[in-house]
Image (cartoon, rainbow, N blue to C red; front, side, top):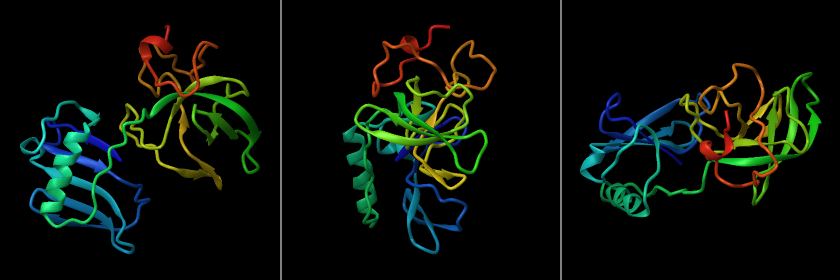
Length: 207
C-alpha cells in the first residue's frame, strides 16, 4: 500500500493506493470519513481516501508518507467503525534499494529492451529495462513495487512487451538527485554498495 498526503494542495485527506486499476471503471463507496474506491466489475479495492484524517492521526509530510503501526491501528479502527471489512496493512520495508543485475538477456520482442534479473537482497526480481548502460554485475538503485517516484508516478507490477516486470531501475534524474546528468542511463554505484540496503542519497550519490 502507498500512503500519500499533501494537505496544502489536496486537503486533509490521506490517500491510500492499494492496487493498479489499469484503467478499469471504478466506483466509490463512502461512509463517514472513509471512501473506498473499487473496480466496478470485480469489487477489488484499489484505493482508500480518508477525509479529515488529522482528527484521527497526526500526519506531516508532502507526498508519500510512512505511518507507524499505532497510526495504522487508529485508521483501521475508523474503517471498522464505519462497517468496512477490509483493513490497511503497514508495509515498512524500504521501497528504494540497492540492486545488482545478476543476469541480462535481450527482450525477444524489442531491439532496445533487456530482461534483467536483479538481486535486491532477500530476493531476485525480474525487471524489464531499456537503460543503455544496464550490464551484468552493475549495482544501481531499484524502485520496488509500492514505491512512489519523486514525479508522483507509482511502481506496480506490469508487463513490457509481454514480459513481466516487478520494479524499475532508476536514473539519477528519476530519483530527483542534485546535479543529475540529463542523459539516459541508470545510476551506477560503486562496489561498496550492498544489494538490499535502503537508498541513501548522501551515501549513494557523490556528485
